[in-house]
Image 1 (spheres, helix red, strand yellow):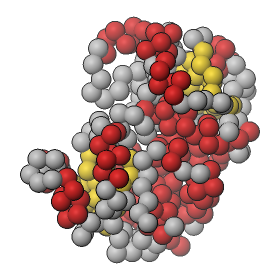
Image 2 (image 1 turned 120 degrees about the vertical axis):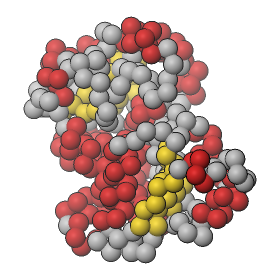
Image 3 (image 1 turned 60 degrees about the vertical axis):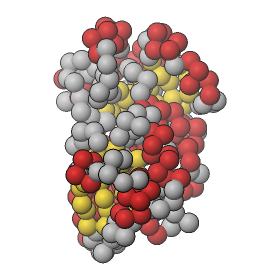
Length: 299
């Protein structure tokens, strides 16, 4: 049976724990697994800009013995030159997995439903599962089991937060979200559909961040999003700064999936401060994604 990695809520906690555990093993002794996926091939089809997802999957796959080829949508005629099904069937003759980064989550679900080869969500307009699973890895590496932590999210309700909300339901950790009231209202129907038990929304940063173990944020305006000026005005009071970090516990950490718009959603003093784990967070992407690749091919 072909496995895909599209959304975290498609997996049981046991399966995600398996990925996290093996990622930890790889990180402790990476040379031991230099031939883990020998002769396996990964295709990258990125329709959106990427640094960390691109590098962590590319370098990560090569370090465990696999091959990587990056595809240009226009060069291969994706969705234009032939049917998507025929193109995927062709790719399956060469690739063992395909990672896609796009603006159409429904297209990812459609491609996965064909069950031609494993599809990985490298970020869509709806979710970013690889990011959040590796973030959990970093939190546990720093603070201990995620089940014992209370996480705060400050800022926009975006694709990264969707995956974080899914993770809270799977791992049963407390998630407190500070977002502007207007954003809450506009996303009310989607939030209600998720049937959240472990997450709570706030319109005041102080209440959301109070006594939390980790404070997370992301850019206020996602790639390709319109009306950026008006959205920045709405979010201007939702910056993570030194005062906000003081609401959290003394040993709390700060995380940002990057890229960061410095002194917009987060100040230099926080992202470069002692509590910041953003570079450890970026590095850990590789180990978790190596484990995801192995899980999809060998589980």
